[in-house]
Image (tube, rainbow, N blue to C red; front, side, top):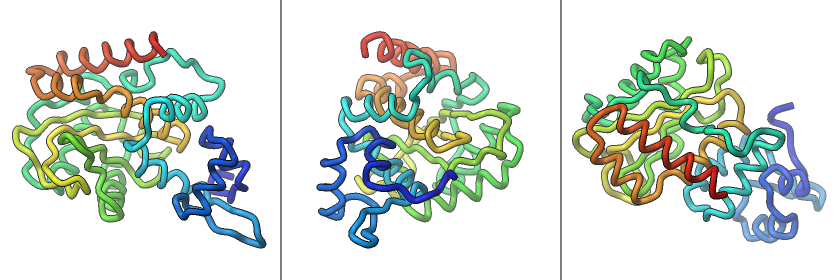
Length: 235
């Protein structure tokens, strides 16, 4: 059952945290839980949303733990991010000047991969997610993605990257404009959270600067692959 309620212990296991830490955070109102009959209960769908929104605030150690927890039983050294990005899913000159046009063009970029089944459905899901809370982060980065994984929208999970020539007002809570965009479209919540955690680890200040300066799609992909290889070989 993908969206069942979880106990405090279930939540701790799900996100790779100590149960005592989870209880403290829940009691402080920092986690999306409710007490029922004196026991904490956490809805899995809301937990996924919470992790998506808080991912960029986690330190490296917590990101590694989360990534491993979400990928339990899988290869820790696989390129889980860049294996989802093909050259056809990269655009260094995205033609967009508003938030709405960025989302449309990103879906068009995803469509060019040949993996997308339902472009309109994906666009609506991205718009709904942005209405709930902007995916704009610091340093000009934004990570549009559906509120919940969409297993039927594409043949395979995919990630697209695009850069605009000028900053776009994307509603980032940190202020400023966004110009580097990563579209993430996964088929289940654990994979989505694992990819998102890996992306947060890849996006160091040096990588962001390099992506700003990359002149070609090939250069962009090379930068991301080299950084991800560095991560998996040093962790």
